[in-house]
Length: 334
Image (cartoon, rainbow, N blue to C red):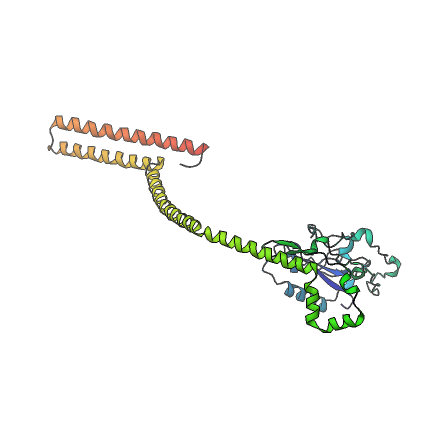
């Protein structure tokens, strides 16, 4: 409606965290909370990091236009002045060096409450007078600190400019006409500036800085061969590392294959197959003996050998199966 102000507070972790949308003065609406201050409808509860906050505000305005809200009985306080939204972490201080500490709003602001008798039960009260906060007038102006005189370069180099005096004794002896002539003639004015000790100091410092930069550049050029050699050594080491990494991965793959083939479950399967093969061989020997293809002495020796081997393998397979079952009860699967 014409008397409401919608405010959106973005948390520090926005858009991972949901925004806090409030209405001032508090109103009665199905999208608002019990106090009529914060929007708690599906527009906010279903908010994700991919949601469009502008569309949400527009949907809220459309809903207010279709179903106009009604002013709450007591709507005399601004929600963010004294009340912090529920679940919202406090904002970290920025710590600007040029601003003095700003007093808290709780101690420096006072607000007169509207009398409750002026509110009717039908929620059709007049708009209350907006309190005067004076936020703009009470903001302190930036105060430059002593660090401002330091000129900081892109590489972090700091240079302190010479102090400029408030008066120049050299000019106090000149007449007004001479000063006017000097001001009109740029060459004369520049000559006067060149004679200033502060400018001479800046020029001297500049020359020394240029000289030191040239010396540093020469030292860097002398270090170029050793740097190039070390760079080539690093490239060789990197190539060696790549080859060793490939060999290591290949050996790790081989070790994994061997460990899989020697795992308890794989050994159990192999014992089971070997026991079945020994049993089939003993059955073949018995059939050959019944058909008269083998002598009794050969039959007894070979048949007993295969049967013994079959039973031994089955016993080992059963023992290994019991060990696997017992281990799986107390440890991770083998």
